[in-house]
Image (cartoon, rainbow, N blue to C red; front, side):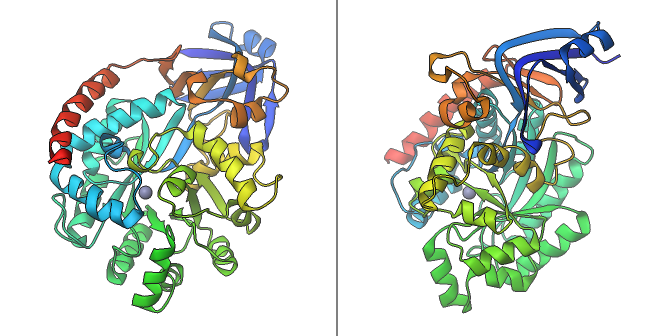
Length: 439
Ligand SMILES: [Zn+2]
């Protein structure tokens, strides 16, 4: 018999139906949520369950980070205060060319996972190279990772051309078929780094293999202007012509988007990953999140990589997204707390095609669950726990985390030793990378 655990929170939050339950228990059996029901009924039905009292806590589904480059934690603070193309071409791409390897990606991804778990993020939609190292890092840490396999036209130490990137992506996907915590998407980097022919190939493969696609789209005004110069049309029009738009696509950023394009995205069921901190730091602009939602586009929330945020803190970005949406829409009722919380939970799950597995707290779903302590002075008094979580909480209040039923954070402490190893590795990488940075 799998172990039975009964979580007894002060509030139990189901974002998909915007429900807050009190006096309810959440039963975990194995990797799944067995039941959500009144405490007394739970005790009668399953007297043998081990009870975990969480008397000052809100219980909610683990947050879902819809756009990240986890391994880039090792470049956190490496190059700040620069415009996107300068930052990429003069700093990030050369540093990646010098340092990125299986070892770099494994260590950087585990450093990211330690930060993500401690901050209540239980699933990350990643995009990077060395997919095998990302998958190994996630499985070793019992972390749910959607591994985006980067595809570019130009060579890096990882692959020589688009065909080679795609070949490595497919081989890696094959190797991990059947693993429950990791899955793979094809991740053509952006319209300005990927050719029409490669996009066509990606679309065909994604269709044949049932894979998702993850791509940066309309991140900066320059990207849009350059596409008009080079292709005679905006990137989204070009991608629509190629047949890329569909419900398998997660479009990261979508900052510069007009009404007709928002309608196009909605019509094709494209999902958008909104990255407010990264867009602010790189001065990319302000994604019109409220307008996207009015058009019916599903919008989730991402941190982007630690090199452009500089933290993988979805609680901070939840608050930022809710505040920013109001200013951008000149409307204080835009993106209310429930909508923001949905972005970081059930919307992210839907975008990844995982809506039947994660993103809320219901019987049958995977037990990806977090407990947030709302007893601190900064979170009291508490009239509305959802308001508190979005506007007045931070990640340091996350006390306990379960992923697929396994407790990975207990009383603010990570349960596995991988974080200590990742921390020691980060020190070694810092010494190595700093030498070149200062040279
Ligand atoms: Zn990105």
